Image (cartoon, rainbow, N blue to C red; front, side, top):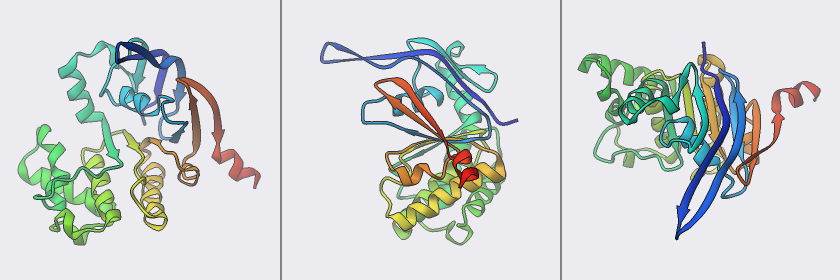
Length: 235
């Protein structure tokens, strides 16, 4: 069963230059498991903060963040790290690949935290690279890959441990339109075929059309939610 994501009265405040900035303001939001969501809004609206809270990279000042059957607010730092390793894959705008490692070795990195043998880690990394269409690039280093191929390696790394949730922060921001389409097609396929719950931050309206639903944030509060599936049925 794919993980649902629930935020109840979530507030997050940062202090900058002695001033408090409320980034999320008693936010209530419920996302269905197995659904592809795009998260949009102006700069400073709280998109990346929300992503970090759902992924357990940050903690809320107040309210509840629940992913699947886990209330993240009940976990300490080491428990959160273990939970992330099992349940969440991260994809960022910058590919964050280590240049001295091959594609396979980069994908294997998060698996070092799992109780797997070297052979098992290699097999899982190779399966992930096969899923993203890079079986023939496993032994290539990042400098030998195109930008789109690097992002697909990053996605393979995110799915290598078979997490239920994928969190993507501007995953096509550094890619041209054609290459971005290839990456978005891949995310859409991972959602539809493997039932991954995907939450993708994007500024690009075209990228948002690949999602099932588009969530709009404004000044830390929930705006409208557009249902792309409903629009597709009407057209």
